[in-house]
Length: 101
Length: 154
Image (cartoon, helix red, strand yellow):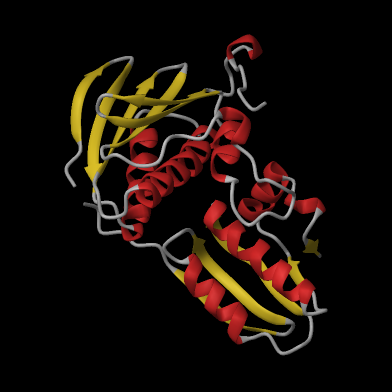
C-alpha cells in the first residue's frame, strides 16, 4: 500500500477556525470535534481556503454543524471556500443553503 | 495493497487492487487512482473527477462493510477516458434505487455520495453481482463529443 494518509490541520482564525488539507471520512471526525469545541454561543467562521480535497463526508459535518448552530441561534459561516469546496457546494446545491462569504 | 496490471497496451490499461475496509486507506486509494490516471496521460480535469469518484465509492464500500476488503478496478482507454469499478465483496445493504441518490431534503445530513458521483461521472451503474455489490462509474474525456458524454443524474 502506498504510504499515504489523509491529513487535516485545524487552527485558530480571526473569525473562528481555519481548515487545511483533506476532509474525508477519515479526517471529518476531527473537524466535527473542532467545531463543537469552538462553539461559544456566537457565530463561527470556518476558513476553507486551504482545503485541498473534500467529499460528501466533509459536507456531512458542515451540514450537521450548520443545523446545530442554527438551532442554537448562531450561524456557521463558510469563508473563502477553495475550488474543491466550492465545486462540491455547487454540485450538491448546498451553496444556496449554507452561509458562505 | 498490491496493484495488478491485468492488461496494458498502447491504447490503455486495466489495473486492479484490493484495499482493507478502513477509512485510513482512503488517501492511498485516491493517491493510486491519481497515479494511474497520470500514467495513462489522462487530463487533469478527468483525474480530479476520478479522485472524487473513488473517494465516494470507497467510502461507501467501507461504510457498508467496515473492516472487509473491497476491490478497485481501473480501466483507461485513450483517448476516451476511464472506468472505475468498486466491488464490496461482502454482503451489505442493498444499493439504493437511483431515485434515492439524493438527500431527503436540502439540509439533510446524509445522502450526497452517489449524487456527487452521478454529477461528475458520465455514467453510473450500481449492481448486485455474484462477487458482491459493484458500482461502476465511467468518466469520458472532456474532449469527447457531447453525444458520448451522457449524464445519468436524474
